Length: 191
Image 1 (cartoon, helix red, strand yellow):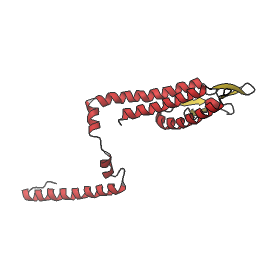
Image 2 (cartoon, helix red, strand yellow):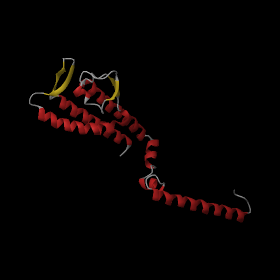
Image 3 (cartoon, rainbow, N blue to C red):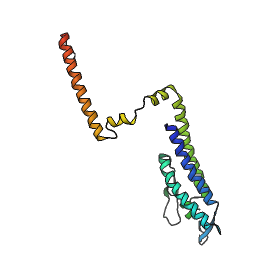
Image 4 (cartoon, rainbow, N blue to C red):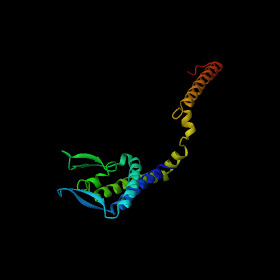
């Protein structure tokens, strides 16, 4: 899979989380939690089982979205009702704040931020697609090292790395002997 295709797959994972959260929120409503100052999102009457099922799905997709977003994860500064001051909150990791404290992390803000993360990843994919279409991109893809070559270099297998090291030493010794032999035969110093 090319890097641009990999990025597009990562973006679609974030969008799947977004879509699942949208569906779950459509079965929920904001209710007063404490003195009409603090609210929370709860299932609408008769929607408890639907929300429970969607909550499980959304939680699983949130985990996948955290991994997919990686360095594109957005951090927002939020002040939660029980905190003393503002807190830096990674939105995918703490997505439940929109259910527990919707006044601190408005659902619309969370959903918009998720789409922005997906858009940033898709933007990177578009840049890479343009680079991959150039001659330099095609050459780079053509001469990319396969997994076996990396294993010989010792990046994935210590045993193969030692074998590659031994082969390199033998090649240097043979090369040195050839140079000395050729130089002696020609009567000149090649070193």
